[in-house]
Amino acid sequence: MSVQINHAVARPVERDWRSAIGRGLMGRCPHCGEGKLFRAFLKPVDTCEACGEAMHHQRADDLPPYIVITIVGHIVVGGLLMAEKYANWPMWLHMAIWPTLAVLLCLVLMQPVKGGVVGLQWAMRMHGFDNNGFDGKPPRPERQPAASLLRP
Ligand SMILES: [Zn+2]
Image 1: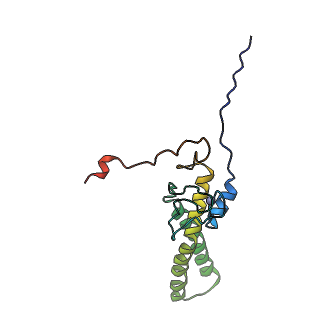
Image 2: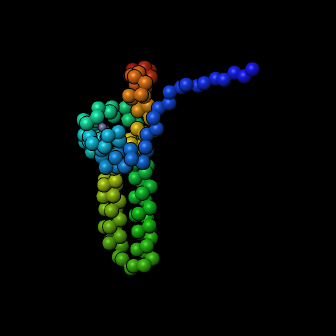
Image 3: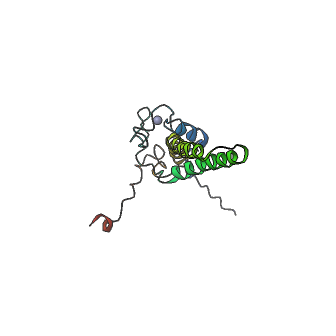
């Protein structure tokens, strides 16, 4: 006699992380790709204007700056070393180019990288993106700071 056990557990539909990151990089909702992701420079919208996907619970936190620092560091340090090796630039030119380039690259890259991180979180069902529209249950409540931290 054999016992057969069927695990009929509903599994969430897999989300395409590549398109979600791409949509986030373009500043669009990772779910539908239509609505805007940001209402200000680094402030995501609360919900997508096109599909209603909730974005307020995203937790990109410090990952976008870490990614931007890594990218900008490779560009600026690599460019500086190449200029030192193959060009004979005066010091004032180095001091004018590299800090300016670093600041500009950080400003240009920060919003797209944050959008990409939010897209990845959506695709991985992280931080409240886990059961939206899947099992009909409301999203889990947001983590709240401990009561002891709220009191002075
Ligand atoms: Zn949307």
